[in-house]
Each structure stands twice: as C-alpha cells, then as structure tokens.
Image 1: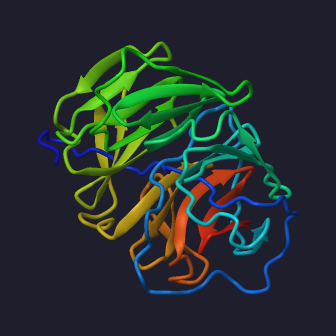
Image 2 (image 1 turned 180 degrees about the horizontal axis):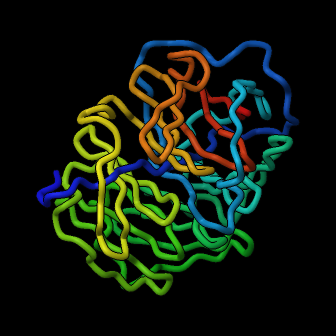
Length: 301
C-alpha cells in the first residue's frame, strides 16, 4: 500500500500463455457459437503482455464485439503463457516448448529445442526478444534464431510477482513491494523499496507503469516515481487479469467480464457480461484481443 501523500496510479500488464497438445496445422475457421458464458472465476489467466514498441501488440484496437475461432478447436488446451510480438503469437507448451503462431491462419511452428522453456513463471516480449523467468533465473531469447542466454548472473527472480517491459527496460516487482529495473545486459537496480506492496498486476503504457494494489489502480512514472490513484477506492478489487494495448487497459474480473479502461479510469464493458468466463489467456496483437477459452484460440475485433 502507498505510504506517501499522493496516490500511485496502477495498471495491469498482461502475461500470456502457451499452446497445448499441438498435433496438426489447421486454418482459421469462423466459430458458430460465441465464447461460453459463465459466472465462474477465470482460471490461470496470464497477467502480463508485451509493451514493446517493436511488437504489433499496441496497434489500435477497435472492439466491435465480433469474434472468431482461429485454428482447430482444442489446439490450445493446457496453454502456459503467450505474448504477441512482431506480428506473431509466441506461446509455451506445458512441456516447455516454444511455438510461433501465424494469427491469420492459426498455423503454428515449434521454435528451438523441445522443452527449452521448462519451469516458466513469467513471459514478456520486448525489443524483438522474449524475456522469461524460469525457476529463479531471468533469460532472454531471440525467437528468430532460437538462441537464448541467461540474463545477468542468474538467480534472484524466484519471488517475482510481475514484470513488464518499458522503453527497453524490464521492470519487476517483488513480494515486499520493491520495484526493480533490469537493462538488456542483465544489470539490476532497485528503483523503490516497499511502495508496491500488495501488487497483483503490472503493465506498461504511455511511458508509465500501471499496477493494481489491494484493489486500487495506480499509475507511476518510473523516472521520478510520481504516482496517482486512478478511479475509486477498491474499484478494481475483483480484477483477475490486466494487460495494456492501444492506449487502454484491458481487464477481466472474477466473473468473466471484460473491461476496457482508459487512462482516467473510465471502464467500458466489452461484449456481454460473463462471456469470458472460461478465458485462461489474454493478450493483444495486430489491433485485436486474443484469448484462449476452453482450450481454443479466439480473436476479438
């Protein structure tokens, strides 16, 4: 919780999940029924999304409520994490294998060696690279070459709550509320000690870090640590997932309702209430929202 006079503005960053049980390459088909509506809480949803200027995740998103099944139904069962970057979806299987998916068709290809991303805890896309926390160590991988390397000396990342990339810097939050920044060479610096305690989600947007702390939304300028509270006290208490894209925060609540939240904290319901009740992955790419629901991949425009 905040202890200074002003209130920090918080927003969520999206974490993406991987595909499961890939067997055959299929083309995109339009679904005949909308995503299942349920009041049950969303489960295992990713909490971070790419904010790199080099990815297509921040293309303008105009949500009309139209959705479409991409690829074969059930191909994404067991997805662990997924992010959008450089025009593709990058996902990790339960066995730790990385896949590259063409969003236009749903066609997928394994990248690198099978099982290269075992013990994955966090996945972030920044500056054409995939940044992962596996076990207690940070790694960076070039999906174009399938080459990966440990970032920094290794260790120290086992308790990371959330991370997000902003302007070539990877920001992360520890359980004690400490904010850290890590450069591309793996050098770590503590930016703030303790003011982010209670943070459940972290996202980067418009040069600021957005967090949800104890049900409140805050925005923080990482260059000077000036922060502001956005919205009413406790207004975001039921949010389970938050990501950023196209100048908005996209949030899912525990009942499966999607919200678009502007920088002033104004929330707009996307689609029908509860229609994202089976969502386990949420990310943005090419001006669309991408979700994994009941093991299938959908895009919403």
